[in-house]
Each structure stands twice: as structure tokens, then as C-alpha cells.
Image (tube, rainbow, N blue to C red):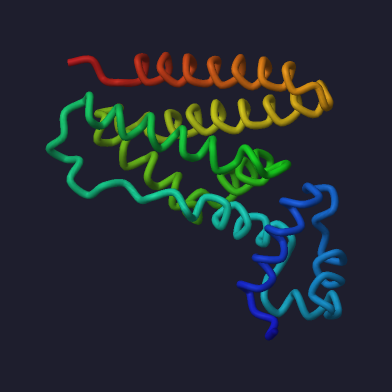
Length: 191
């Protein structure tokens, strides 16, 4: 297998998924790819750049915003926002430390994350004040990654008890849904 940026990112996603962020080091990647550490830097300039690419890959399966939103009513745009936020939540949930990775990428290079651009497009169609699109996007991302991290940590804390895992999962999912609804209620521009 040739060493390419895609193979480095794919391997980083696999390491993150299996072992978490603490084990995602350039040395670990080099070992996994059977190359010298220096070879990785031909494809990614730094671990920080790699984390942005990993975040983009984690969110890559989320569909782009539909193009016909300019004429949609607020209820339709709101439904798209709910769907997108839930899709981001579900994409991150099974991957340890994914919330930290996406939060890093959104803070350092949000333009690299298509899902963030989709959120911004939807918020614009939702008639959020133009000066507040960035703040509204950040608010929604914080809600998503915060709830992902809380659920992942809670599941670790309760251990193997399946009934307790189910209770914790239902509670946090319910809190996430409620919070998402309240945020959308509050950020829509009132006519």
C-alpha cells in the first residue's frame, strides 16, 4: 500500500476509533503504517492538521445542505437543521474522543468541515441574523459535541450494566433533543 494523505488519515481514524485520542500519535501512526515518523510529514504538516482531516472524515458521510432552501419555509428549514444536528451527533457517538477532535477542527479550521458549512447555510436560511451565524453555529456545535462527550463518558462510568447504559443513553439523548429544540426556538429571527 502506497503511503498517501488518505492512507494516513484512514489509519488515524481507525486508531481513534479503536483506541481513542490518547493513542493517536504520529509514532503510533508510523508503526501502524510501517513507515518512519518523518515519512508522515510528507503528507501532513502536523498532528493538528491531521486532526482537522480526521474530523472532516468523521463527518464526511453527512449529506450536504439541499440547494433549494431559499424558498423553503421556516418549518422546513428547522426540520433540516434538526436532521443535520442529529446526524452529526450520531456520526460522532460511536467514536471515542470524536467530540474533542471535531471541536478542535471547528475552532481551528471550520471551513474544512462540510457539516459546519451546511449548518451555516441552514442557519442563514433560518433567518438568523447574519452577524450571529457564527455564534449560532458555535452554539449548536457545542451542544452536539458536549452531549456526545457526556454520553461517552457516562457509558464508561456505568460500566457493563446494560440497563444503566440504556437509562443514561435515553436521558442524555432526551436532553440533547430538548436542548436542540430550545436553541432553534431562540435563534430564529422573529418577524
